[in-house]
Length: 136
Image (tube, rainbow, N blue to C red; front, side, top):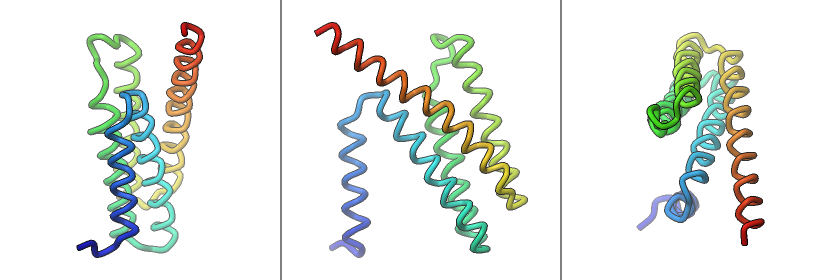
């Protein structure tokens, strides 16, 4: 039935995490997925695995553009949402460059940006939990 039971378990575990998550948690999962793909891309560059590098970078680009950027509400989010959109667009351009030129420094730059924005999302989530706990 399953060709790789461990991979199937991990996929089911991820799907359960996604189904049971609030929107804030889903955004954090996107940050984690993009970061993991970039770690994999750097490892593939070091191994001279061109197809693997490309697959990992393309996955990160998809997460950033189709996940993080697409989730922005530019009308309601105002300047902050527009600034984030610009940063996500910049990240995609840097990753395209990294893919074409095997540029680990461009991947590192995007990783740093993801860590900073993801860290702000994590902090916001912690603050929301504290506020909810104080209101109980």
